[in-house]
Length: 288
Image (cartoon, rainbow, N blue to C red):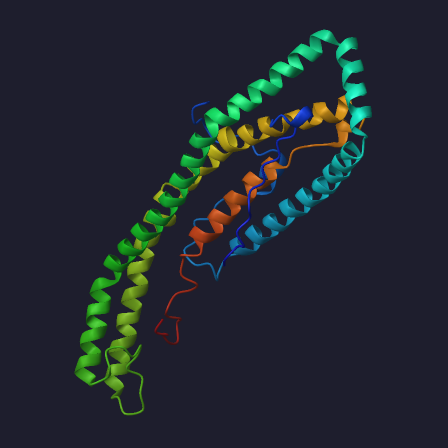
């Protein structure tokens, strides 16, 4: 399964052209878009459980919610941008005169958001790149560990192909010219590989394994750092719209949806490394 890459969105709007660190904690309660995320599975085979389908359904649901809210936001933004600049300046002046304390807080907030952006964006970008690299390294470690677990069985299979006279690159000795005993021996090797995977799987796909540990860390960072940072950058929008008399109460950020999407995509990529199914059934073995 491969999810399409979802490009993150950054909207920082403030009046007059202004462009508008907590430590990692325990996983948050599932609220908002996170409530649609299915629990991570410990199943070893993606073809024999429903986890991939649940991931796809969650991604579709989160994206649908995001698109609905974006449509509302875009209409409010259009109404805001349709205001005549002179009228906008007049409304702003009137609001500031009528609400001097709030106006001061507003201007301080605009400045703080700009400072927060300049101060923290490099940190957020660096952390994003770090998680991307950690994911790649995790997959490489998994693949190397799996190759090690399979090594004895693969060595036996290679020796069998050499003994029978089959091209080493060919996946099986099952050829009309091969002796029956070779088929029996190959099936035994395939069952040995299945046993190796069965012993290996819980170490990586179990609840205490490195896969779930990394995804837990990534989810916590998205929840505690990435989403709040982008929410804060967008928070000026709602106040700008309210000052201008646009329906600000209907406007909401969609950064939580985007953070959840990033998480679901990472889960999909990593869990795509699982085997589809065992090599052998009760009757016969395949050779993939």
